[in-house]
Length: 146
Image: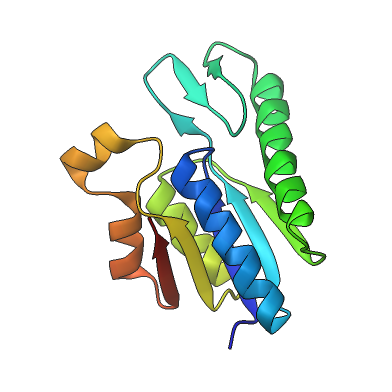
């Protein structure tokens, strides 16, 4: 049923649960897993990355890239610890919903598995959650994990 599963991760509990579910689904169907990490801007001055505290936005682009890569590698390692062998990953910046949909198209993912709420809960209350926007816009299956 599943061939390629995209999992956007942001370090939130919802994203960690989504990664766990995606790994279980992928193992059943021998599907590949593509992990997407989009560093989340918490404010004008900070950015949060998986498994790390806030990183100052005054950090150089090289420092931000390095922190994002570490976060992506941590998520990929978590997938491997859950039995995944075919795991790729991408680090992108921008509007999370738009980037997730673009990445699903780019990677020919047939399913997106994501948490219902990530780290941007306050923003979600104002403009709608990322998962809601992805579910209503993506051309592939979207599984939302609570």
